[in-house]
Length: 271
Image 1: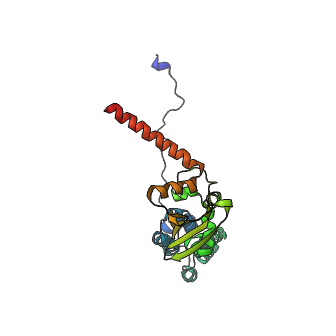
Image 2: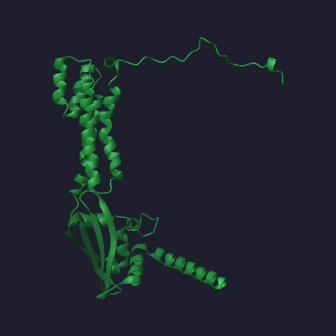
């Protein structure tokens, strides 16, 4: 290969240099980014609430959101060197009302009202959608309907079918699909007792729901009574699977039996 005949599409020239812009003085910096950060803080809270596991983590999250909004407005005012004393006093009074602060700040900058409107909308959405407000609607009456529409997979029954809800599975288990429900409340625990008939005998199925005022922490299938006899141990577990898994319970039993047979065969071969 003749290196002398090779041609390059680009050659370095000493005149070509990387140019770094000088650091802007405090008064020259754009405040748009910081103010947009303040405007979007409630959205951060709405998203992160999905990861809150109890009322304590939820309280810390929303207190942090409120603090960050006030802190963002205060920090912006502290570094606002492009306003006079009269405007500063006006903004100082509005620091504790973030939407009003963004409105006045952008009005002074001639930047419109978009940020303040976005912040106001997100604050309203956060107020009506957060777990504490939603928790106020949880009571003995509303919980019955909520649980019946809950997929049984939430109760740690292995199924990928979200159509299998607690209500549908109970309807399929009780005779003629008829049953009644009584809900009692003690602390964070709601006890729901479903009663009806199974094979002509009186039957009761109990489900416990734990809600701490912010989030549903646990939904557990508890006791079962048929014909006045309370089921226990393996008999209870098998009946719970029959109720909440239906046909899948038989398939699961078959797979477990096959695994036991395979294990016994392996053990006999080792012996």
